[in-house]
Length: 238
Ligand code: DX5
Ligand code: ZN
Image 1 (cartoon, rainbow, N blue to C red):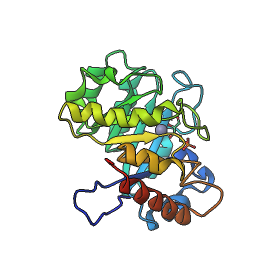
Image 2 (cartoon, rainbow, N blue to C red):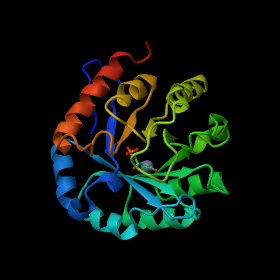
Image 3 (tube, helix red, strand yellow):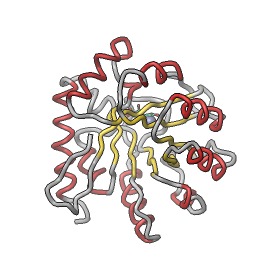
């Protein structure tokens, strides 16, 4: 889902629903409603219960869903064996993969492996990880994933320092003349979206505090998220 803006200078902001937050017992119906509401990107959290102490979804779910939708598949790896999972999801057919700099022993090689599959490569940073971790892989990146919560679980509250980290990441890239999308993941709520977008977020992972919020339907929640995006864009670069 990208929010078209009249002023061509305004960026497109994508909403990528986090599938682990969907109704996994009625997933196809959930996805259909999201597609009808204009979603064209889905975020999949692949965890191995080692890098993070959780395992909400697996490879077979992604494989089965691949056959059901044309959405862009945005894979967020939270695993120790990154190269194994890169090859596995590449075989399924995905469009972008983020690997955690904290889990990648050979980050440059893994990012190159992702691109060798013809897939967009992203580096994911935990809240405490400095932006300098990106310094020597910038040439290998198609996007950056800023975690605004500690990875592993949905339903958490944003780590306050990460809101300024989004703006600092945008400045970090701008200073180097690099125009990469910044994806933001964790407590992307109706209240936080304007702050995240005005700080420079281009892709928003919608989870329990927005797209899948209990207060509304998927359609209502996406409309509310779009309004929050518009508010954020109005203050962008201000
Ligand atoms: C957490 C995952 C997120 C999570 C977001 O490790 O990466 O995608 O599902 O859930 P909320 O939006 O509820 O924080
Ligand atoms: Zn995620």
